[in-house]
Picture 1 (cartoon, rainbow, N blue to C red):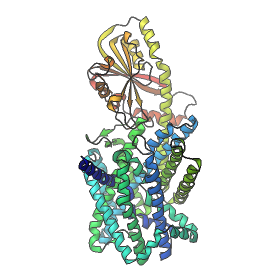
Picture 2 (tube, rainbow, N blue to C red):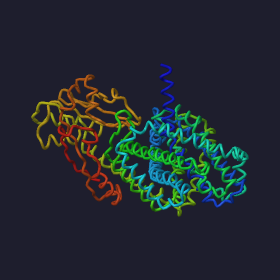
Picture 3 (tube, rainbow, N blue to C red):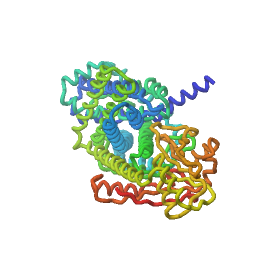
Picture 4 (cartoon, one colour):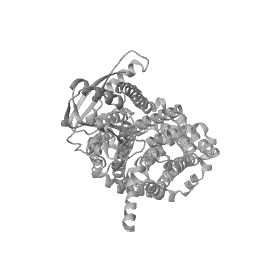
Length: 627
C-alpha cells in the first residue's frame, strides 16, 4: 500500500510539472531577448549580471515565497485560483460594500486572465518556431505560416480533450526542464562569474546605477514570472505537496540555471541576446531543441486555454456569466471541459495577433500588463484572507503588503510604459471581459429580483391552490425554482393556463455553493418547506461552483433517503420557466448595457440543457420580466 501511494505521489508530481509549470517553464524562450530589447542596455558584464539578478529574485519572491509559500495556503476545500479567493473573501467579517468591491476586483482579475490566455499561446509558440531561423535563415518567411498552422491545429483538437495526450505532458516537460538546466549549466561552467547574480546586491546595484533603464526593464522581467497564477489555480487538481515538490526539486532549479546560463552566454557573446535560449546549445543540437521547445509551448498554451475553460465554467456557476455550452471531454478526469464558444473566440484573437505583431519580440510589448494586474489583485485578496481568516497580526500583514504591493506596483507601472507598444491589447481584452461579466451579473440580479417578486412564497401559492378546484392528474412533476421557498413561475403558469396539476409535485431549488465541490450524497437538502398534505414537496439541490449541475442524477441519488423524492427522476415531467427580459425605461442600467444583456441572454443555453433535464419529458414556459 505504501509503495502504491509513493508511486501515485511521484506521478502526481510529474503530472503537475506537465500541466502547472508549462507557462512559467517556457518563459526563458522570450524573457531575456525582451528585457534587453526594451531596456536598450549596454551589454556589459555588470548590467547583464544585474538583469539576471532581477529575474532570479523576482522569481524567488513572487513565485517561491508569495505563491508557493503563501498563496497556496489560501485554499477553498483544496481548490485554488481567483474564484477560490472570492469564495474565501465572501466568508470574512467585512461589510457588504467591501465584499462587493472585492468581488468586482476579482472580476477584474478574471478579465485580465482572459487577456493573458490569448497572448500566452501566441508568444510561446511563436518564440519556439522562430528558432528555425538559426537552423536555416531561408526558413524565416515560414515562421508566421507555420505558427498559424500549429496554433490552428491546437484549437481544432480542443474538442477531443486533453485526456488522451495528458499523460505525455509530464514526461515532455521533465525533458524540457532537464534540457534547459543542462544548457544553462554548460554556459555557467564556461563563465562562472555569472554566479554573482545570485546575490540580491547585484540587482540593487544595477537599479541604483540605472534607475530609468531598470524601471523599464522590470516591465519585461515580469515575463519571467508569467504562469505564477497557474501554480495556485491548479492546486485542486494535483494538490499542494505535489506542486511544491515539482517546483523546488526540478522547475525552480532548472529556471535558475537556465537564466544564469543565458546571462553567461550574452556576456561572452552579446550578439546572442536575440536568441539566447537556443544558442545555449551547439548547432547540431538546435533542431531537436526547437522540436522539444515547440512541444513545451503547446503544452503551456494548452494549460492556459484549459484554465480559461475552467474559469468560465466557474463564472457561469456563480452567476457572473450566461449559461454556455460546456462539454466534458473525459470520463475519468472531472476538470477537463471544453467550451466551444470561448475556444473559437480565443482562437480568432490568437491567430489575429500572431499575424498583427509578426514576432515574439514585438509581442513581448503586449505581454506582462495582464500578468502584473493579476498579481496585484491576488495580493490584495491574500491580505484580506491573512487578516480576516488566518488572524495574522497587523504588523505581519503590513510587512507582507509593503513587500508584495511594492513589487506589484513596480511591475504595473513599468508595464504601463509599453501601452503604445502592445500593452493596450490585454487591457482592451480585459475591458471587454469585465464589461460582459459585470453587465451579466447586474442584469441577472435585476431579473432575479423581478422573478422573486412575481413568484411569491410557496405557502401563499398552496393557499391559493386550496381555494381553487384544480384537477390533479397521475404522476410526478418536477418544477425548477430559482429561490428557496418560492413558487416557481412555471407552477403559476400551470395553474393559470393548463388548469390542471400532477398529483405529486416536487419543487426543486438549485443553489451554487461557495465550495468547489459538493459530494453527490450531500447535494439534496430536505428543507421541510413543502406541503405534503397538498401533494407538494420542496427540496434544495446544492452544487459546488466546479460541479456540473445534473438535476435528474442528483434526485436519483437521493431516492432512497426520503419518500418526497421516491420516484424515477427520468420518467417524471419537468417544468421550467424561461425568463424573457423586456427593456423598459428606468434607471437600473444604461440602455446599451440592457441591450448587451439581452443579446447575451438570447444566446445563453436554456435551463433544460444546462441542468441536464430529459428533453422529451420537459415543458418550457416563457415569462416576461422587466429589465
